[in-house]
Amino acid sequence: MTANELRSKYIEFFKSKNHAEISGQSLIPENDPSVLFTTAGMHPLVPYLLGEKHPAGTRLTDYQKCVRTGDIDEVGDPSHLTCFEMLGNWSLGDYFKKESIAFSYEFLTSKDWLALDPRKISVTVFAGDENAPRDEEAASYWKEVGMPEDKIAYLPASDNWWAAGPTGPCGPDTEIFYWVGEGLPPQGSNKGTDSANWMEIWNNVFMQFERKDEKTLIPLPKQNVDTGMGLERTNCILQGKTSVYLTEVFQPIIAVIEKLANYKYGTDEAKDRSVRIIADHSRSSVFILGDQKGVAPSNIGAGYVLRRLIRRAVREGMKLGIDKAFLAEIAEAVIENFKGAYPELEQNAQKVKSELTQEEAKFRDALKNGEKEFQKMIPNLMKNPKKEVSGKTAFKLFDTFGFPLELTMELAAENGFTVDTEGFKEAERRHKEASKSLDAGSAKGGLAEQSDVTTKYHTATHLLQQALINVLGEQVAQKGSNINNERMRFDFTFERPMTKEEIQQVQDIVNEQIKADLPVTMEIMPLDKAKEEGARALFTNKYGEDVKVYTIGTKDKWFSKEVCGGPHVQHTAQIGDFKIEKEQSSSAGVRRIRATISGGLPLDK
Ligand code: SER
Image (cartoon, rainbow, N blue to C red; front, side):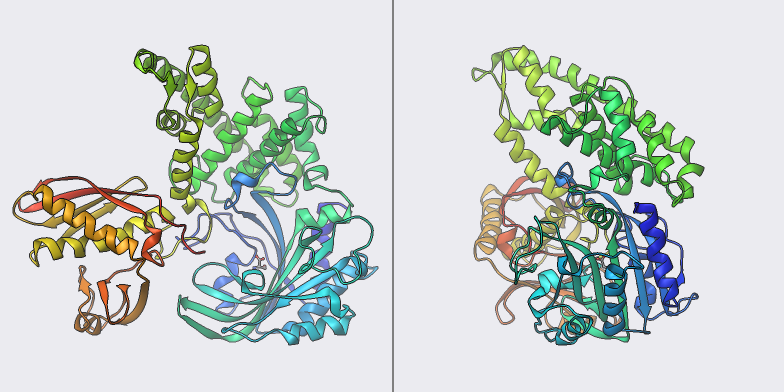
């Protein structure tokens, strides 16, 4: 069976079970600023899962292209992909757990459909917590279709509770795994006992709830089913292959790379990795550029993700010794391979190829500029007794000029310098934290660009405001604030420059609150009640309107309380060291503080 056949069979099977086939949607989500891309098959169906009537009925099936860049750095291994297809079937208040499980099992094992060996299938169900009970119901339906007791693992919410994002429809799920180890699975083996040899192929979510915010989970008006089967993975196991890259989904793409690089895939592990990255990233780039609502490379949002994908592919191409523009040629193979299922790729072929070529040229120019920039640095480096390029400088070359670390190291070596690679990694790590926003679904409060670092800065702003009031008095009022991944700026009313002592005091107070690791909690209440409770409110909300109130500290002993949209850290130790870098005049009667944070604990996911 091929991926094309699997796709058709899936749709055909669910049509035979009275599902209407609906078309997959654009990769760029409609009216959803919280994610950059469509990250799951259910994504376009969210309004219907929340209760809206779907014009095609209550049983639906489709295939959907998806992009997830959360683990982009993992791509290069044999299984991770940034772009994949999800096959899905939905019940909108129609059937529930029993039929969903029976359908899945029939499709996977029936001789008329996939005919997979039932002995190589195991499942997981939700173990239960304060939100919902242990899913004995799902387990009982699995037993009904013949799943042995010891092939059913009960796992916690981290495994078996599915939500598209911080808010929205969600619920317990049951996941289906296929044995990818040697021979047959040993007696009693399941995902709970051996997570390496069981590969997830299908996820059936029983959407019974809507998450309104961190604390509020409400039952949905109707019980829905949302399932997603990974096309590339399932295709891979059906063919008994060990990697998706060895299937016909990627082989024609890899063939072009082999030709361009004059290299045979499978002969050198480091080079294979480059080939896989190029194959994955170029496929994703073609899908993004060739989308109905395709975006062009840019420095923000989806365009930035695209730029990163293209540039990383080019870099890996250079490692393989490809020294001319090559992505357009690979794009042709991608389009040829997927135009049947995604005709938009062929319709947009010209645009796809010209954008890729342009971006590739831009990147090559950027590399040249980086090299010039490095040459300019040489006289200064000569004076440095350590003869070392600092991590910060190396990172600047990388971040601003797209100049890869390996090239900086080569240039440095040619000129008799070393590079502080540890320092580079540190700078990169910090920056990465800052660009976590690229992870789909991680944004709260509606901001697609929200990252962990800006969240930390956001909470630090609340601490700073309160500390300023404590030191300088109630005349301090926030006039504005601006946060990016590198620093925060905070403007406030105050008539004179702060003294050194005052600045130190304010900084110390903020750091004390961070060290005390105070909890940060959020409550929704009417604005008037918030004000009654002493919350500071900057913006003029409507009278009686419900607002979010963030409290830093405990209910009876809090340090700061503000009306704010969030998001914020969960506890203050996540912020790290706080440092006031500058205090200066901003305009008449308004002072400006520029501050930075560093270190800190990771945010809870
Ligand atoms: N929403 C679930 C997933 O993405 C099933 O479709 O895995």
